[in-house]
Length: 188
View (cartoon, one colour):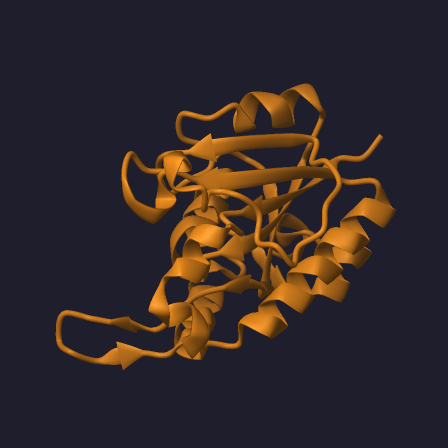
């Protein structure tokens, strides 16, 4: 029995409908996300696939875009659900599933680096899980702030890694996540 679960957050076709999808290195993300999925399957980890849903638009289940990105291959996740908030823990079966399955470690991946992935990481850490945040298996798009500065995807990923590492998660590579390694608590 494994004590680790891979969370694949919002890796869905909805994002491909945005013009900003083409502005960043999506093929690298897709390759990295698949490598993490393949590694998790080989390790026998539980795999949880989460979709973001909203009542209207490209994130509405009725749109037909709330489905896995076509390039990502995963026969059947152990748990799959829609979420309606940024954190995958809010209003979902996730916490109960993790407890019932003896999961102590979460490996976070998916879309968007600074939104749902970061929020779920913080929430999971606050609830007591050991969290590995795999930046190279997260994806985001440029953002423009209220002052008019545009933050690149690379800047957003670096900022997210800086604020999470050692506080809410161990920020690590795919290889480090698959190897297990030192926990955040052991590192502190």
